[in-house]
Image (cartoon, rainbow, N blue to C red; front, side):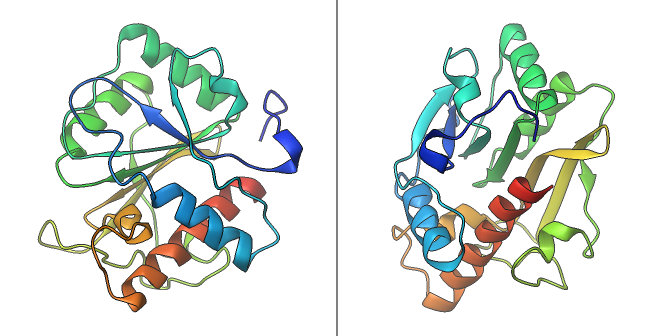
Length: 204
């Protein structure tokens, strides 16, 4: 991570990305607080249990080195937001995006605008994000069934650093919320992935 970012009180605060386009960026509001609680209990990483919310044009964007986004539908960035996201990620920021079913086409379209020369690359199962704290030798677990086929994890790399991690056909963040009454073993797998993602960001 580059030095343009800082941590208030030695805590990481995860910020939910607000965006236009009707993709309900705000759904599952307890997901990030629940994940933060689990990270604090399981690791020596300190994460604020208060979710921040920020848009790409917000002057406070650079206070939050880790962005989370999700949704069910259209993601739409203005030209100015595309440029700001590119600058943010190139400066050391990180984006974790989780398709909550229906976001895939729009997210891929907008990422192609942000990094027209860098594609979303499917990660091999030996990538460190699958082995950071908990081991996932077969890649991502399936938390919710949305599409046929296996879950998939993708990255966007800039200068050899993964700046975007995107999970498709699994809906990891749904397992962090209590809204869906998922079995404990399913939620456990989702939390383990979340721990790996945050740990990976902080150590790579």
